[in-house]
Image 1 (cartoon, rainbow, N blue to C red):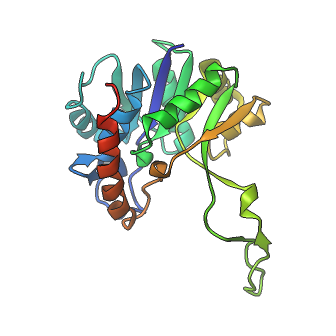
Image 2: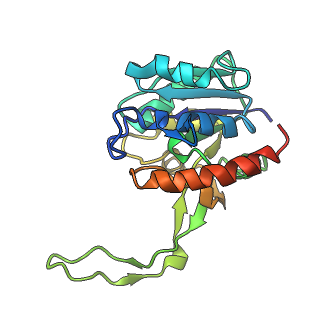
Length: 236
């Protein structure tokens, strides 16, 4: 089965405190979006990157240095004010060269290993409508505080998982989810599940952490070194 990907990178990085879009922030000498696309390209034969409309040239310049550079298999398109809108724009851009499976990834999870992506794609190839990488919750969980600020009741963390990307879907499922799935979902899997599609969980990875705040950049530098070593051992 053929695999394509949408890498969302249209955020402006407000919480990161950067004057540049988050995906252009450098870690280990390269923008996050470059790290994300390099790993995604080990799994997907065609990739669409959604970027802030005001910074398309900068994204194109950053990605031009990758093996193969920009071309029909790697394109940058304007994103939207919402993540859902950006994914829809990326899916639309894939329509000229349809694939069987589409990965929806976040550039902010730039160091997710290719093997995690392959597991999600393999679950769809095996018959699921979609697949989502998840990892166990390691923090102690409690319910939200009461009106008086009292601590909420403990929650069994064994019942919960943290969701990562890329989320994988049959292409027709993802297109239908964005056509009919509503406006208030926080991710693509929720859109698809709301329509009755079968979405399964696959193993995520600790390197798939989302880079959100300035303090995350030190962790990202550490992960980048370990991830690059692992990537070098993979077949190109």
